[in-house]
Length: 135
Ligand code: NI
Image (cartoon, rainbow, N blue to C red):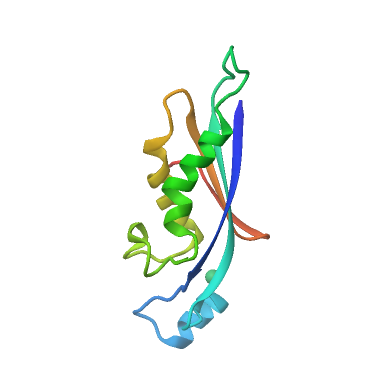
């Protein structure tokens, strides 16, 4: 059985390969190559897998799951510039693909033993998301 908690954050970024010309960056990354940054309203869906507890009927306490996501992910990213302010994104292209892998590495060690982290789905826009299963 799977349980999902959704959280939200806002962050700025820029996608640009420093080895490429301005024209090539604009061709490949479009609006995300804008030199003076831009923001996205990210939605993150964290899904854990397990079995409901006999006494509570809960797979896991969603309030606690929310607290974990906020402490290890949202507090690090919300209202930040992903390229500059976020140590775990340093040296990486701040794409949704790379961001979801970095978020997995941040969060997974803190997931309690009674459940397993199953997937993280990260929406960059309402119509674009990346889903990661840890491999
Ligand atoms: Ni963008």
